[in-house]
Figure: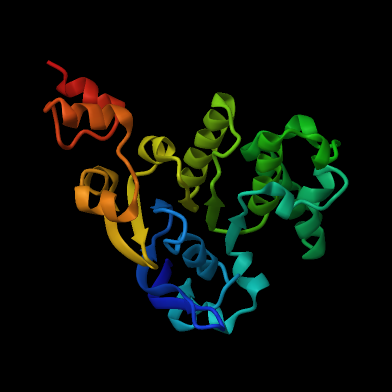
Length: 264
């Protein structure tokens, strides 16, 4: 069953509209990047997906159940949310306790608890840090600790907020491997990010937002070649793709590989 937003919108009590009316569907095992400038409505939209915000118009369904009919905690166990700043999530005195918190709170049987913890630690690549206080770890490692703390649950959808911020090339490789494994397990991943290189290299479906609404939703190669969408969402082609366009080599090159193919 998917995540579905049906005319979902959100307005603050003072009347400020953050998201107008969004129709969006996230299928099992999909990787979807939501892009657009600050204020486009990206964060509000994904927070409606996991129950952190309740739509003030329309509805959001997760596995066919309206988020309005579940508690935030119930929805969050299905749709995990990893914040941009890991310090907004982490609270335990060591990494092991951080990962163990939810399974112990939910009183899972020991075999399930150990199995899920081992999976999360392996996916996040934090085996060497289990006895360390998260505050003593570099930001990049703390990000993976926060991810592991979400992956330990039974969530089948994971939302990543600016996951590449602060990551070096090794961290990016680890993140990509993790996304590949999650997709192979049928876990859907939604990211909101300003890192267009990450989007182009890692995501096949792109949702572009502007002014509180979706202005494009489709294959990466289509969205990133639409000049009107790029202008309205204030995102730019990668430098190599822009160079190919400027030189008259190709109007639809997106990746570096695309550009290489069109060079005479």
